[in-house]
Image 1 (cartoon, rainbow over the protein chains, first blue to last red):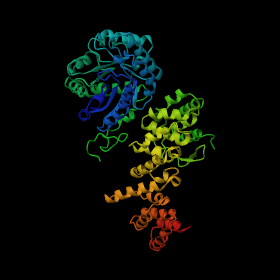
Image 2: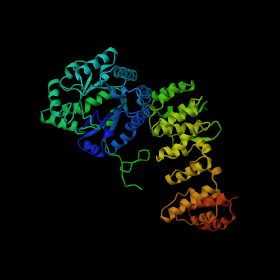
Image 3: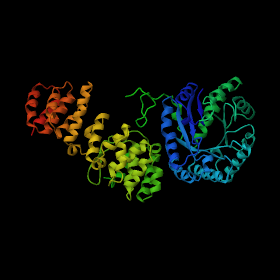
Image 4: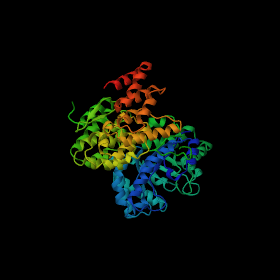
Amino acid sequence: MRIFDPHAHMISRVTDDYESMAAAGVIAVLEPAFWLGQPRTSVGSFVDYFDAIIGWERFRAEQFGVRHYCLIGLNPKEANDDRVNDGVMEILPHFLEKDGVLGVGEIGYDDMTAKEEKYLVAQLELAKAEGLPALVHTPHRDKVNGAKRTLDILKDMDFPLELALIDHNTEETVPALIESGVHMGFSIYPDTKMSEERMVAILQKYGSDRMLVNSACDWGKSDPLKVPKTAALMRQSGFSDEEIEKVVWHNPIDFFARGGRLDKGELAGPAEAGAPEALYEGNTILRGERV
Amino acid sequence: MPATAEDALLGELTARAPADGVAWLGDQLSAARAGDRAAVKKAFPGMGRRLGRGELGAAGALSRADGAAVPLRAWRMDDAGRAALIAAFSDGRDELARELYFAGDMRERAGVLRGLALAGEGDAAMDAVRDACRANARELFEAAVADNPYASAGLNDNEYRQAVLKSVFLGVPLEHIARIDERADAELTRMLLSYVTEREMAVRTVPPDIWPVAGRAPIPGTIARLVGYLEHPQAAHRAGAARGLGISGDPRGRAFLEERLPRETDESVRAAIAGALTP
């Protein structure tokens, strides 16, 4: 089973995670830009963070045979922070041009403030102008309203809905989105948001079109193997291999390929682990084995 | 002959890169010529996607405005696109190149260094070169040091010597370093021979292209060392030592060269010895 995890904050994970993900069939991961668990105090911290998820993280993943892509964006929490918001908007177009960047994200609402909306719209305009997909998450609180308001904004600004992925869905948000044409992401967490069992029930009820499953693994309590675990439960629940692969492989790839940055040919090739002695700008993931 | 360096690079790319990428680059070059700084900055990162990242495969060299040759042998397709953009942007070129370097990933940085090699003017972008000289990534270091007349003119004596020594360490051919014949000095010879000593103590090898450089500015002990390597089992070392002795012009080497010549069976070494014996 081939797996593309379309939402994983690998910068927060250790190399053991890459190893077990690769062993469980995760061939590619997509890392959306997000916050760090505490606020950044300057735009320079964003520059370094973007550089890290575009460069070093990609190298780390390759060492385990995992292809790594990313999304670049100003997250909703820090959209509220006047120390950084305008400055980050200024550097986004530059970073969106970088290799390995498939689109804009993750953006959206957190507290549904006016500033969050301002920068959500500005970033959607940027994605629209570049023809790139956008990953918009739904807020932790007041989720259904957040999902509806996100969809209204997309429609108001004539955003191509086939380039929109609304993430962190639940049983409550799906009815509001299912007819719209947007793609729907589901983050499977150990305790909160969504479980494998609930995910399988949603797929049984609504079908697998435009449905994406991710681990959203980050610095919090989360599990980078949630996509393979969901795939396993789908199999136990009677889903065919084709249908499972549609959800965990083809759906995310077909969606992100719409931006023209994802090379399907590259993904079709065998994922080979990088040479252990390989260097990234002179640095290596080896410890104590080189002089 | 193309009118400008960027036209020449566009010509090289037309033969090898995807047509839509070349057409796109043509538009970007027009914007760069018109002084559109924002367009250059936007075009810079995505060059590899549009033109490819493989070897350019151009055997020749371009000429800088000051006449220095810039060989294209190590360039990649995206290097050519980026260097063309930098060459096409004339008002504040060095400042823009510097900015692009420090905002770039490794491929972008290498492209900036190629652009500077071709069209860098003053000192404004030299700290990009100095940064690359300190890099551990061979690809980046090589773009700064090899086939780069801009770097070779701008580095001070100590920086230049350190760059040569690091080239030896990383295996960058010394003959690819611009102006090495004129900038080699006694202090560089001392550093190179000290490195040779260190390697010999560890029973490790050194690259044979050290010898002609050491011969440019011999210090006490250099000629003896060259004479010793004239009997090395590897032909490349014998040839290098013969060239070094010839370049030094030291009369003490002559008898050893004459003594070796009749015993020498390798043609390349024979040619090197013959050259060294010719005044």
